[in-house]
Length: 97
Image (cartoon, rainbow, N blue to C red; front, side, top):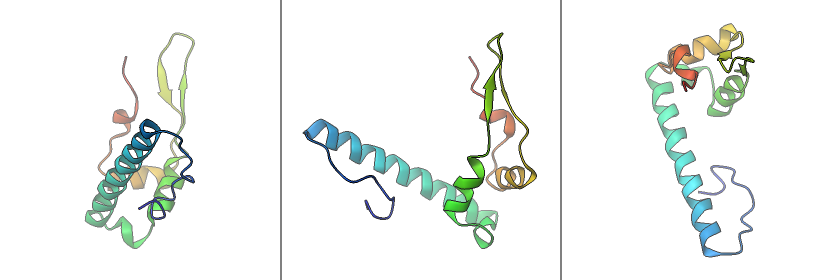
């Protein structure tokens, strides 16, 4: 499991650290499987790998204005297509206070 998720080298020194690390890997696995399922449904899997998806999604930027409002900067066309394929609305990306 550690190799599939490309986890960091396991260098924890107590039981709580190990438990947290394994919980984090489990959460990442669930997230990746969920994204892969949506990729299959929308046929994105034919064009992108999961790494490609994460690389493209990393281009999304959110800024916070001086009044505290958070907005997302312009989203590239390729990323918009991926979000549409994953059934994610751009408005859902902004965390509301």
